[in-house]
Length: 424
Image (cartoon, rainbow, N blue to C red; front, side):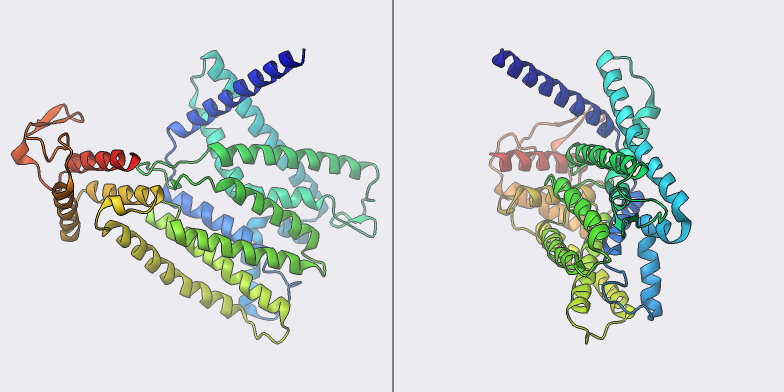
């Protein structure tokens, strides 16, 4: 009996994982997020993460007008502090039910698409587009405000709810709200974890704005953001908020070092935006720690503002130097890791796919092809074969004497050989 139960459990888990992979494969198939949309998502996520650091209980000067402007701006994407301060208890409870309904809608939509794929009757694009949009919003935008809101339901002051002062804690309706919030947090963690595991584009030739290295960092980042949201509600206004500041300092340092090592995203604008946000988070964390440790630290909002202005050109310079160091590598075999190889291929593809190339681009492609020709010993390489090169794109042949160093198809053939030789 026990062996039968184990086999049935294994079979169920296998079928479930297959269904999940099938659904996210359908979602990923036509994913092509615009770069502008990707930039907005990254900025919103960063502002939400920085937002809990910029509050007056840490010790920042509330009389500084620049700081007050920063404080207001970073609280808006978090939603919960604004609702608590300006919109009252009715909006607070309505928002809780809205968040819970949104999570249920996501899960039901997921089940519907999985069932439709299984029956082979799925032919409507709208449910897929809706689930694709919800998946993006869940991971990048909603995880922090929803976690903060559900966690705040448990927050009580003198046996009364911290927001709804008429509600007696741990009695009647409050127990119902706590149960609903606990279930909402559980379902949110489930849905967000699925998105973090499966809804990511890692192909370097993808047009998706959020295409990045296949490093699987989404789950740790998700858990970190949820932990910060819970601790912000629990400790943000208490004497123990130094714990929160300490976690921010460690986390921001880890994220900054990770970005400087690999630069994650393929597209330059997205990668630079992410780097600026990460380093700004580190800058805000350092300032919060200094304010929390020393009352003599002369801090103003301009310190934060000008720090970010300095970070922007710094990240742009670091990114350019990183890409240049990869492109000017003497030979692809000396590329230190598969992550650098993906960046190398991405940059070469970007140059080869340009409609109008500069003289610098043509010079690079010339050096790229000549260098490969001088080192390559593979008899199947297009440069070593005198036969005509078949072009499947337009079902034609490229004659040997017509092969130019800046020819896109020739560059793609060489890149394919580089991938194959690197995989050996």
